[in-house]
Length: 425
Image 1: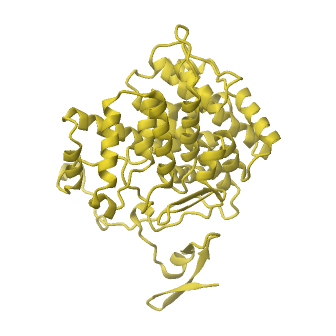
Image 2: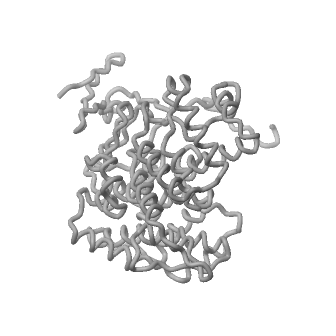
Image 3: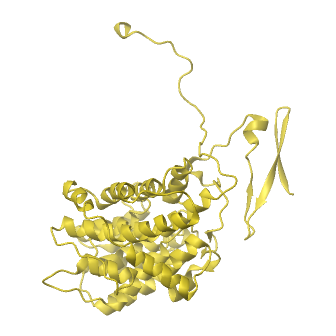
């Protein structure tokens, strides 16, 4: 086995090199502190692997993303969201019978306890949907407690979450608008059911457009997992304490809420609105973004991991064009988005700094075109990411090398200091 040798004073530590199935390499530092007394310091964990995983492979330099070995491009073109969810959670594509059984279970578990509506009614009207969702996911455990940890009962809990979170999201929107709650229908697929629960009402029945169903299906597939990102790492870390699945997922929802993570698609729309309010000068916005002294930033461009074009963005761009062409929406905000895209992809500064439009840029436009309220954008992301969170939690549960997550630190505070009584301060 290939190793790296660390020499610190009179101490020598040989660290093994771990090689992944795609050839990526990492140094196993598990015995570093025990042997040398040293720890590593890596703010933001950009160079630190927290686990081994067989779920998602991504290569930021080459623009590759695969779920269980299958390119995300193939899944977006040929799969449906429930099939992709099954793939991530169970490690293989389902047979027709397995997919049908999974779909039936999702349908059978789509209703939520009527008493949960009282929770919604008591949240302040200004509450953000992500805060509500995080709380409601935790509340689900009171109504649907986890049973013994075995495969059959874990699958039941998993199915409940996948199905009920979608219902909770649509219900929260309806109640926030003061509208009658729409219940799931057994004749509709997963994304069509969600759109119907969101927009159907007694005086204006919702027409289910197949293009929008396809767009939502692709949106959720592209967001289903993305390796060890902020929210996924949170689910794994919280789950390492052997908490119940509901609590781990609730923590993931809270982590996703931030504008630098799941809230980026909402930030795109807010940025476009600010450009519109300031006169709609796209060239001026581009120049401001290049000025390091200007706090203005173009949201939806560049990515922490991808150093080339985000592979999901290519797919979402095609879907974005398809949706806008189908709906023929006259929206000045979307016009600014198209101008911004054209200007940025041809600008040398953005090309040199790998600031290509990412998935958040196009998904924000698609969700707005579909009629999804801006403050619901991150909720839409959370529904899509749910299968990945569940798969990661389940994998860590089965990991024979599991350990309670407990990062170290380098202390930089005061040395030993005497306590001063309050009357002497």
